[in-house]
Picture 1 (cartoon, rainbow, N blue to C red):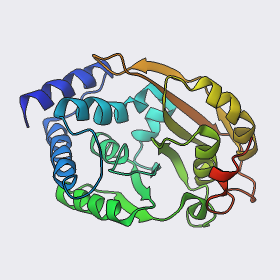
Picture 2: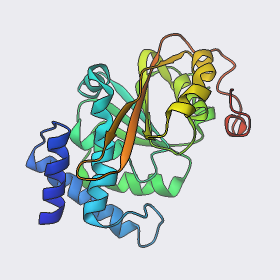
Picture 3: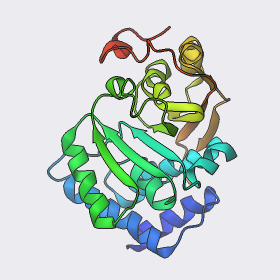
Length: 247
């Protein structure tokens, strides 16, 4: 591990009040190294510099701890099931798997090439209780093997909250949470999604606003509690949530 990577990681962890072992820090660096190597032949991320990767990907992924004690407790519970929707390069799922080794984590994405890479990462880093699955969120939410079976769903995708909610909430069991990583400009988006959240069985908490450590990059974490089952009509068929969001 390089000094730059280690120093930036230590600073970010300190800001989040997280303490991890040297073995976990080494795994995070190995993950970074694998992403950068694969990025030469596959478009995984535009963020490649060590300092930026640590801050904008690793620390940002771990900022989920700002969602509060109920979400954090799910990350520390061996009986929890977590799904990372639209995981891409494995963010935040791989980072959460390394730092929080207790829950079972499913990395879900619509592109098989990305998932093949993540299978390599899982094997190389010997990550337990971590698997990948290919498909569309709209289809998964109707599959009885997965519908309302997760304690926690996370998503760093760029879709708006009314769309993300239709992807995520059908997969979350009542009493569980959906956590969205967002920019600081999220309040209008949440307001527009209020009807969708209610229909889908969710109730959003107040956004948690923060800046990434040592920067002026503003972020927010939005946690949505699943307070009742999602009606059978949702999610709608693949493509419809984006074309005709619940409003």
